[in-house]
Image (tube, rainbow, N blue to C red):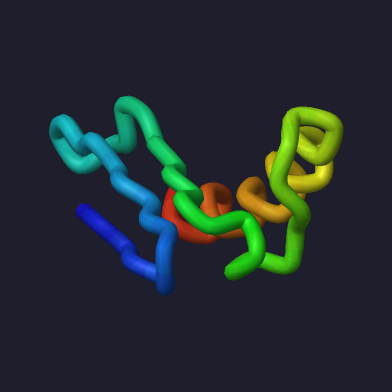
Length: 57
């Protein structure tokens, strides 16, 4: 299953109806309201988590 957002995507790998893993790719951090650079990685990860939890249900 794939979910797309401008410049981002969430991809779910399923087996027997269960999520094996969830990948989040954010190509433009500005699109989710974050700044670029590694010093902002924690903020970017915290903004990506709700999308992962929403698709895991």
